[in-house]
Image (cartoon, rainbow, N blue to C red; front, side):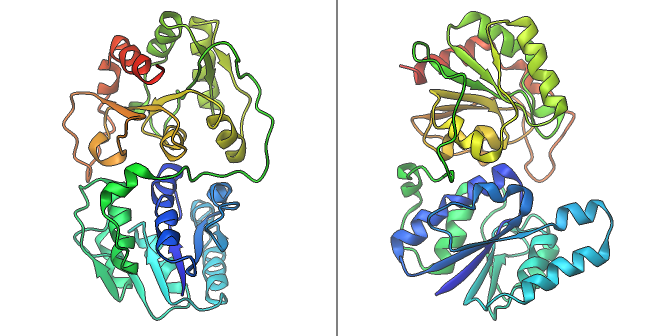
Length: 331
C-alpha cells in the first residue's frame, strides 16, 4: 500500500503530525509513506527513516508573490507523481485540500466540515472523518490515521512514543556544558502575545544556575535574544541554526523552555524535557503532557477556533512557577 500525507506547514503542526509515522510502520512495515510539505519545512522530514519520499512545494511563497502561474505550476507537478492508494490531508485547510486533490489517487481522506479548520476543505475529499476540532491536535492526528489505516492502537500509546526527529549528519554542537545543566530558551513566536517576556527569561537565568542557550530564527528574535543577554550576561546566544542544526542541539540539552512554537515542540518530539508556556493559545489542545514534557498556562479562557492575539496573559506566568517546574524536570 502506498499513501501520501499532506501536512504543508507550520513547524509545530508538522511535528505534531509526524508522531503517527512510527505507529503506521509498527502496524505494517510494507506501507510506503510519502509526505507533501512546504519546501521551507522539508528539513524536518528529509531524513526520516519511515518516509519513502518527501515532495516539496512552494505554494506559500508563491501565494505571497501573488503568482497564480507559479502556483498552478506547483500543483501540476503533483499530478505527474505515481498514483497513491490513499491521500490523507492532515491539515484541514482549503490550501491543503486542493493540494490533496491534485495528487493522483481515487481516495482522498480528511476531516469533515465540522472538524476541519476550514469547512470548505471537506468538499475536496471523497471520504471524511469526524473528530472535534477543539480536541488535542496530536490526538486528532492519531485518530485520523487510525481511522484511515485501521490501526489497532489506543491513544495511550502516544505516551510511549520513540523520538522521531532525525538529522542527516552529526552536526557539531557548540556551547554545550559538561558541568552545568543545559537549557534552551526560546524567546520568539509567530506573534507577540505568544512570547514570554524577555525580562522574565532574564530573571530565570539570574535565579537558577545553568548553561542557558538562547535560540533565534530571524532578526526580530535575535534582538529579543540580545535583550535577554543584556539583562542576564551569563546567557549564551546561539548562532542561527538550520532545522537539522536545531534538531542536533535539542538532542544534546537537558531542558527546552519556550512558548507554543515549533522549536519548543521539538523537545516533546525527541523525548527531551520541555516546558511549554501558554497564553493566548490552548495548552490542552496544542501539546501532549508527559512525565518529561510539561505545560504552564495563563489563566485566560481560550477559544481554539478564534485566537485572541491581543491576549498578553502569558506575561502573568511567574518565574517562580517556571523555576519550580524546571527543577522538577532536571532532577
